[in-house]
Length: 257
Image (cartoon, rainbow, N blue to C red):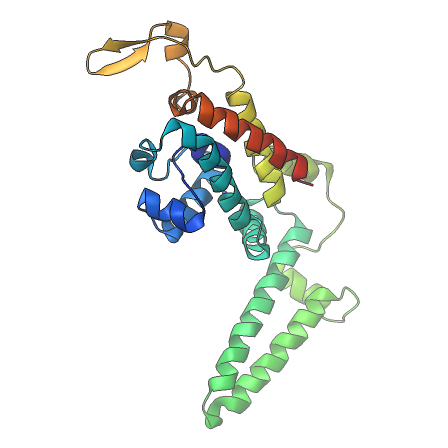
């Protein structure tokens, strides 16, 4: 389809309360949400309003991190977000006959609802034909859901290409491998990202010396200079920010099911 915590909790770039966070960084809620989505789903670090975030005084950053954490948590905890996540996950996840049938039923139900809306606003001369189409779709959905329906096998074979059955060992292994990187729930993905952030920031030496090399500053220790881009971003965020972010991440992990 996700490095949520590093992108926002560990950079010290987000300020106070949802509206103040957005206004202080000069971004909109929509842009912030898109950035959170990309970070959560791709695992690639992306900063929100980084330039203005650097201007937040160090003594204010711990509170800024906590309030931004609450902002993110509220956004990703809604039923709508969780449903959208699962739908996107199911599109890309490995599928056996059972998963394909589930997807076919979901699509049929979505198409039915859309056709209902068209039927409601259709001109009188088309009402009957739309009504018949709705009746046929309703029967199709019922047949797909009921293995005992006389048309079940025919419809399933036609729409899915295979009849559902017990998951094979090979499919279970394939799905388990996929879920190591892309868990099937928002909570699962949050756990993955939060744990990764805690591991990443477990050994940052904020007293490490920087030296000037050309036009930029680099670590005097070659080993530290070879560390990942994300690790260096967390180093630059400073101890106040990272300490607060780690504390928030640890507490959030305890709250997740």
